[in-house]
Amino acid sequence: MNWKKLVIAIVAGDRREQEIARLAAATGADVRAYGFPWPDGDIPGVSPTADAKSALAGADIALFPIPGIASDGALFAPQCPARIIPDRDMLAGMRKPAHIILGWADKNLKTHGAALGITFHEYEHDVDLMLLRGPAIVEGLLKVMIENTDITIHKSRVCIVGQGTIGSLVTRYLVALGAYTHVAARNKVQRAAAYAAGAECHTLEELEALAPRLDAIVSTVPAPVVSREVVAKLPRHALLVDLAAPPGGIDRAAAAEFGLKFVWARGMGTRAPITVGQSQWSGIRQRIESIMGEGK
Image (cartoon, rainbow, N blue to C red; front, side, top):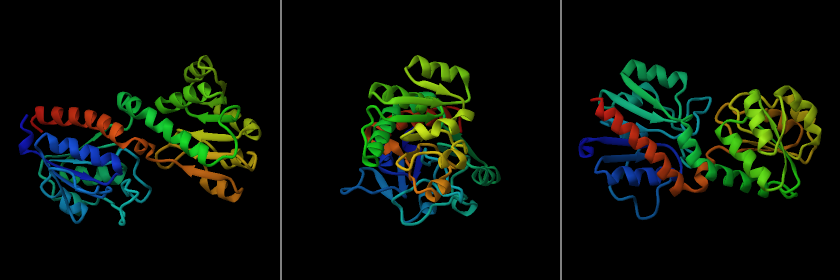
């Protein structure tokens, strides 16, 4: 494929997008950017724009962040002064047939895309990419736990809720660090795998009874599984960390009500933005090559 004929817009994100933009520009594509932290000295071959609509104008491909879309439709852009909410007017300037590659699209974004003939390519749940950025997420979680507790991870009682790709990695690392590691999950095969890794396993229904014995809960499930009833039974020193995309897995209002420390640790991949940006680009590049190979 001829990358030099391709216009790529990179909209929103964090420092990972700096590396993605650099690698995209290295292909020879025309790369435009808005909504992620801009480095000193610029990014060779990448043109910053005044707003998201300008970045998207004439683009064949748009890259949106992996972290999930907020309830108001805003893209993940923690350091952008303005919330970036893609609407029909913002997307209408893309060159048709256009494609958007992102973690996942919500209902409103998909509705706009359908009206404009834009195709979405979601990769939030691609196991290979999750594993490649998994170590950075785990390191980011450990940093959060160390900074927000007065006890060591070693010998602490931690429950990981959910045993998908990231949950299982967290379990393995916490067991290795000597935590008394508990796992709560619906899937009995996942619970069995966690048991084999050295964790004590529970169903989600058993989480409330377990709560009084815990020093921390780490949720990896993007659905309300850590309820007010569970939060109410936690010790007052307990830490709640949510690694999940919106809407998250922990009742945040209950955490505030009972005075518990809560951290919504979205975007933990930014712990190592160069490493994670490179892994994300590897998947993005494959998708672009597949799209262009199909004649768009």
